Length: 311
Image (cartoon, rainbow, N blue to C red; front, side, top):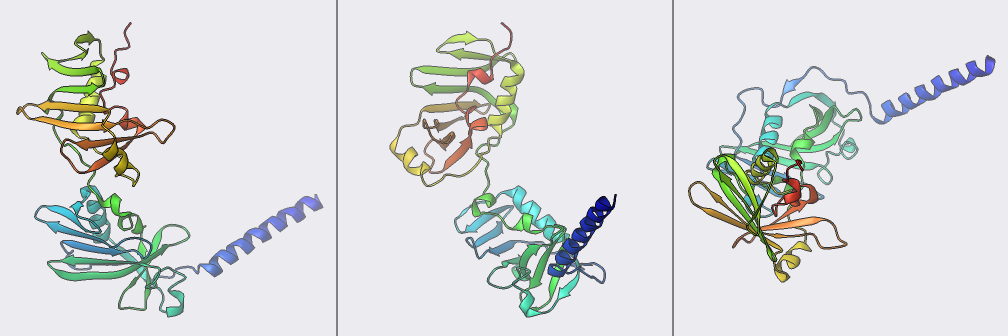
């Protein structure tokens, strides 16, 4: 019993030592009550500049009713990512100052060389210029410092999740955006095989080289919904561009919509013994899109994913 008591007391001692070390390295944040980042009227943001020392400068700007990426390339911005950034920034609560010691800035990740500088504009005016640092050990706050201040503050929540992204993560991934009922027929031509789906009296009919095969209507509707609101999984890697430039596409897919328009895209199937990546490019388009196997395998009108379970 004595040995057990000794071990028990020893365990408690080790835990207390651990707590002491953690609190010594990361002192408890003592605050004087939360305040809003924007205590008065919340600004209507129209531009962001995000400078990450380990990545490219990202500039996002609202033009008309949509947001655009201005740097490091020009492309339509991901509206969902913009909404998350705006919502997070508009609702920031500051839980006080934890230090004004310049020597502490690097430790908390808010010095000019390691922190992420975020500038926000409204009506052409700079309304925020902040250095965003690490998040706290308990992952409940971000350390932050205004660029013109020595004060290191606590921003409630993990704002960095909404603000710090790779440049491609700011891109709009939308390829097509239709209502499901807009699509009336689909055709995929691959080598010597032609696969077709067409709606007739509210029933989808599938054919391979003109021969009808049974399909599960629910699965077909799921595929139509997938195609109608098609979003890529990622944007091209360096190796994708020469692959698409030097080889013919494996499948050409076309689909018609109710207004009579036909939309066409080409698909490159995965290369054997390599990562299972599908590539898509619109007809006459200059942009490649990447798909992983789960979504990419549907692009070429895959019968195995549509067939009826009935024998």
